[in-house]
Length: 613
Ligand code: AGP
Image (cartoon, rainbow, N blue to C red):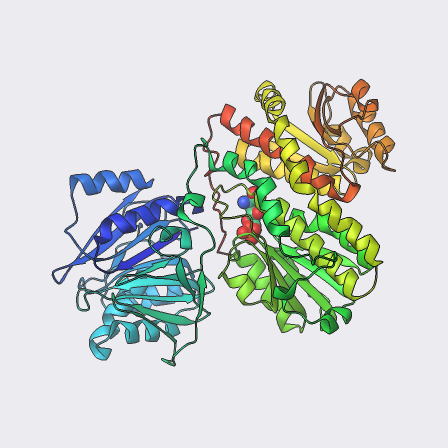
């Protein structure tokens, strides 16, 4: 998704904005641009392709010194990734430059109106219309903030907008609806960005902006209003990690760093949520125990990896609470006329907190009267802000597009919520809750042990790098792990991969099996009631030529006779197994993509946060 950076202060805007855009590269983009104000003149440079192309252009054709600037990395929606479609877009009279993230749904009508009024449009984008609308109203209202407010009222859809004008030097104006924008508050300087990573080098003091708000930055201060000009109350927060967290820290890839950070991410997401006497305390959830006792159904809404975390959690939460748990693909949820109401707890799982599909599903659920709770890794983001309560994961910033540590911590958070529900509803004995909490407490160490399996997995991935397809199978909590393993391989190695419930193979998918087809099997513990059924599934596919890669527990000797490769994971309780069996699948996909020469941290076509529906 697009990256946005704005700066106004005492320092050189160009280097701050370009460095900020570099921090946002992980969001996925295909062109970049920047605008600065210098001595009453607006000047811009923009270029298709990666940020390095813009930097080359800036070297050949430098911008003037300036202390006010905005920058953008564009993930093309309307109009291809070309120089002319790159942002910033400038009005015909040069009085305004804007950058935009989101989709303006009524842009066709606006383009037609502008064209009919004699404006010549210079791009194929929806965004450009905003520059012309601002330029048209600016002379009438005489203030960039007022102009932004009035133009926002004309727009439909999702947008984060940032504008500058040579008529108002030392001023940067932003606006947001459904799309991320956060303020960085400095000393004599202020920042706007899609993500705090863009300015955390300069300040960790931030302001989260609400829906339909306009923010005005000068070096001296920040003011926020709604679209009608009423002063808005915004929530300050402190970024709880430092700039090093968004650097590779000696790893070749952010994904490798984030895989390695998983033991700490799990530990940090557990910390402080258990009392000394072994009871859960989730005060920040801010849902009363009475509310939670009134719940008769849980619905999880999420996308991609977050959806898989919900699928894993379903087994545990239903087992502990005896409350039905539905897990829904967020993009489907609101269109199927779902049955939700005051007795429903809707849990929105989202690493970024900005996924539009999940946000829209959350709003639909809230409109139906459901209680809403976010599991999120990004403080100050939209989804937790719009939920009744939130349980943050503390995985630290996840930069690689392929989600890894967020997945494990989403499971942890969902488990904590399930146990808390069981605690307040007395659905479990306190001793049993304490026992599970102790199991969770052991998980950072278990995940750390799995990291020792990295090398054998890499060798297997390189051996299979030329295969055309990989199937993943599992049962019980191993089934969503199979889905997650397949997703990782699809998004990183760009190859066909599919996850199945092992019991489903004989109902059709086994027709896919032929000599040499790799099948990755998530094998439950030998003591698990489904172990032998998974062995049977292995025999079914092996008899037809499949190559078996088993993810199996230390000490499981029975699996040896049925496997071509075995990746060992530590012995953990059945419901905890996804926390260890997923890690080798992350490494497998990462290594396969590396072997194929792909951009692992920024895979083709993908964005880290999908802020369009
Ligand atoms: C997973 O590796 C992908 N990056 C993608 O499926 C992601 O999980 C999904 O887009 C949801 O993102 P969110 O957690 O930020 O809402």
